[in-house]
Image (cartoon, rainbow, N blue to C red):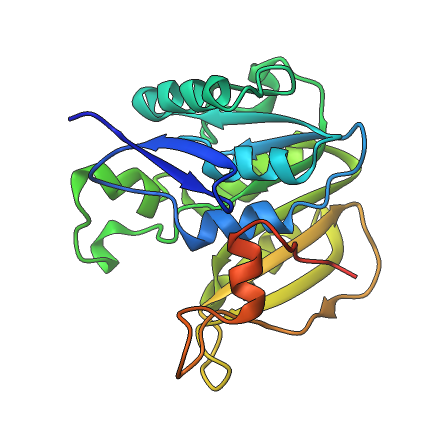
Length: 245
């Protein structure tokens, strides 16, 4: 079945993605908005899929260079199409790779930053079976530890690790990263102002030693009125980012 071609980031980004199965949504938008790469930085996205977050981050950060890693051949092919479709071949690339293999096998120098939206579940038995086309996006076959270990290896000392994940895995994330990273900054993501966070955005620094900072939450929806809060809508349209200060 032919993919759809959608426009995201306020229409600035053209994205071809599967008509059925996993499609880019809020998590990809949040991850792209959370990328704080500076001029000349090299950024890696692990599990880039069709390139939604990778390309959105590249448009937001025109002075940085981006590389995506993806194990699924069909998703990688679409990512390469999307890079060309948006005219970003000069500073965005994508290649095959997976967290089950050592980062060194990619033959790339460590990056200034690495980001990911790891699959939310490690154990398929705890989750009602997803559609086959969505399985790799929901089930981390090698576990969350493999993803965080790969991200840590992928960045230089002082480099940033950025991820979006389930709020109830925050303790696991901090515990897995703590041996090699610190200077944690945590931003809860709440569906409503009066509801518990369901997502967290985490920013860590390899070898960082600054105290953990818990930042104000991002609230996605209003109980009444517009579908998204003003802040969330601005992020989706590419008109605002997510500061880590």
